[in-house]
Image (cartoon, rainbow over all chains, first blue to last red):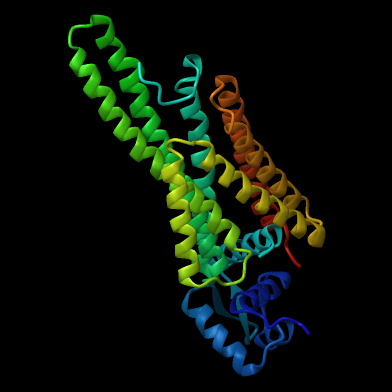
Length: 90
Length: 237
């Protein structure tokens, strides 16, 4: 059985999904790419917006979620941490 | 002159420099691991930050103790011996130096063993507080008896380090990562240095052990940087 994703794993999946899409993504796409329910996504998104890790932008009357510089830096930190966990076996 | 350390005279001070580099490596690892803990509040990261922090503090205690002892024993008191005017001063100087050395080195040994044990316990089942207290009490006893039988400390360190090496070997078998293999290698090198420290009454062995220990911590630092670099490099999983 697959291990339950931790909070950090979910944030990692969300930020990676945004970065893979070139730095911004539609909220519905983010929901699918990060394997989240609508309720879950909004919960995490509120937190990420509050901490300025992501921001809402508008383009051609569409809403997008964009990763900020702080978000990119945070994503790098999570990547380092995941690599550390793999190497140290924790 | 009272003889507290096993270093040959030509190596005095150089061993402090070698230990200082180990201190820098361990402090950096402790700091970064603590940053990881702040991100995800994972207890393994907290325990690792504490372990590497304790090891760093132990090296700091050793460096400070040696620095003061070297200054008084080999520079300050040597001048007094040459002048040979106040024999009493030399006696008191040596006595105070011994007390300082005993306290400083006890702290180094206790913090070092505790650091190694906490690092080992990252991979163990959750232990009760009483279990941990018993282990720390045993380390306290080992530290105490190491004043007369210094090898007790190095032998305990050797056992803990070999257990860590074995643990990383098992992890390597599972994940086949080069970084885990290098981690295992660095702990093996540090374990080797502890084995050589057992024979440090011969100054040549002391020098060899210090240099091998430095090599071990340096390998650990390089491995750590490689892990961080690999993490940054990976854009997706």
